[in-house]
Length: 96
Image (tube, rainbow, N blue to C red):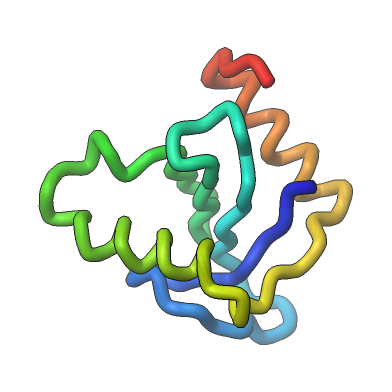
């Protein structure tokens, strides 16, 4: 079951205000390397930090730590989240 947590552009947890654009990390999205999908506020999506270069190593480590930390406040995905994930997988022609 895919779940989500809210993180900022630095990979830090945050709680969005009502009506605020949100940046969500979805996990596990099993067809993807790393099994996560990061939806940024404003509509940009990141499916892997591997192509982003060495400067993202610290960010990859933060995301891995969030995924593995039992204290991470994961939430269940709603229908809109699942539709978004499926749309991204379809757009990138990634088969689940």
